[in-house]
Length: 86
Image (cartoon, rainbow, N blue to C red; front, top):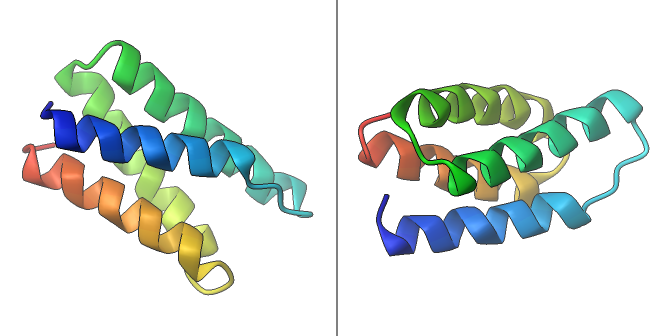
């Protein structure tokens, strides 16, 4: 994974880790997405990146309407993974 892509994923991880939402189920999705990003950055293999992309897409579906800032970061990460072929 390119350095620029890694930096963007690091930024998204930091953002997701700092966000707190009142809905416990949505918070769980954010926490799991942040953890999946961290795992992918620590061990970047193609299987993990494909799993991450799917997880980010599910999280995006939950937050797209109510939290546009979160959705923007998630879309960027999904695009990064797609550009890398995942």
